[in-house]
Image (cartoon, rainbow, N blue to C red; front, side):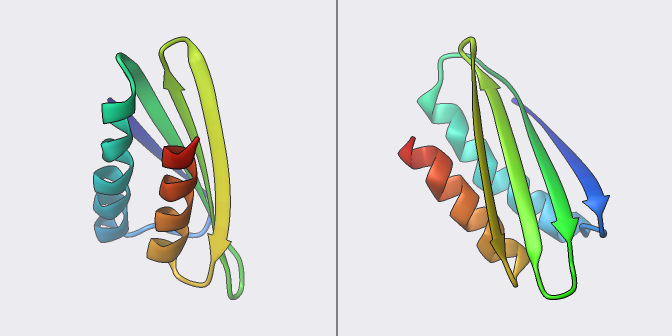
Length: 84
């Protein structure tokens, strides 16, 4: 599964990219064929918004979450997608 990270506004460090890849890579176990995951990071004054789109098994799942911490926002959106 390929992870594409786009910074719409703000910068995401390599550490944060690796964390997102590890966390979102766990979604692969729920699908027979997960092609790719796109993650968009938008940083505002006191907020990080993470938007994730998963393309797998002929369907598209999308989730978005915001938090003051990048890791917390990634955790929230990963949990949301796992529950779906």
